[in-house]
Length: 284
Image (cartoon, rainbow, N blue to C red; front, side, top):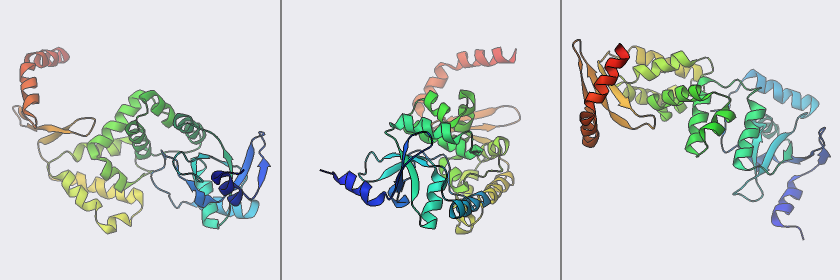
């Protein structure tokens, strides 16, 4: 007896064929395929390459199968490991999509996605950073995360630090910004700590006109806004997890540290001599 999942597969699988490497490919309705649980792209860009891909599929058909697994939570549906652009192209063209179905665990799927996409995709700084943050939030180890994104642990620390200082919501609003590299993102991360800067940027990105811009233009708008912000000597202190610890107000002669937690203030006071000695050691 054919189960419910089998009936659904039969209903939406029009062709079964052998792939060049001997694997069996099926043709699926793309409406049954959900994105990866950890997408590496921040948003689907309407670029020329994608339009060329659609034209190629119309002329020559789909030459390379996508890779899916059966959805772990939704019977009858699939989850994409790689081949997002091909699947989206087939969906927009009203065509079925050739797919290989594999029994991946979450970690296996993540590695397969990375192995397939890293050599081909040129992820922007923001996309790499958000990918690292998302995977860590899902509980993947640093080693698995770094392998999936194709980066070293030192690079991962830089990526996470920038996202934490700017704020995930603001980075998502800006988008991938493919033309913006590390240095310009770090400029935003530094300047957004100035007094009232983050509040003003949140108002900026909430404007409907802001969302109508291309991602690179949104980035430039935010960069311009933080660079023209009134200069303040007060700098926020934010942990890697995004918690606001306090702030430092600098002056020509010194500075004042204000922390939000009384217990942490006492902790600093008790260890002030240790911190001072460590500072003097670094200066020598």
